[in-house]
Image 1 (tube, rainbow, N blue to C red):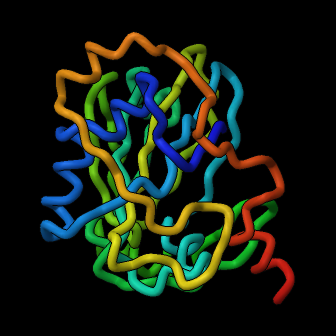
Image 2 (image 1 turned 180 degrees about the horizontal axis):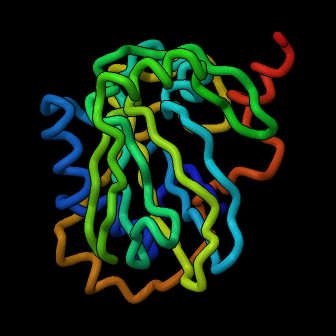
Length: 219
């Protein structure tokens, strides 16, 4: 996984800032101003890539000082994703459950198993099969997971997380506080001639995830 906190001006930055992504996110979040919380590239190559346990993104972000679950992500497959190569799995409607308690599981945060199992009894467990270039917008309280990629096909996904300006974290952590997001028209993506630059992106290094590290200190 590669994770960075500011979108930048390269192709990945244009994708995160374009109206079709950032503008749609603002509409889905009630029309309030949003900012770029972080972007990440999830890389599960053939026969590699570990399992992501059941969790809510807010199970991490709550510990970062974000008081409200006014956050969401857009999931953008770089490769086709299906059950064979570890597509995303979600518990449909689980964002209405509120924040579930989370516990550290290795370098991940795991949603309370009892709550997850009870949710699976009453809510649909969906395998979100997608084509490269599709987009899935989902709330930070949606319970989701993915299995290891045991197939012969790569499964890479680009994910952009957004937070509301009004939900600015009350403490500094490894993701940014409110930083104005300069949206661009959709045409900026194809017009961008900067394929890759590290300038201004603020990459998170391994071991800097304070939402997991701080939780470990309390258990």
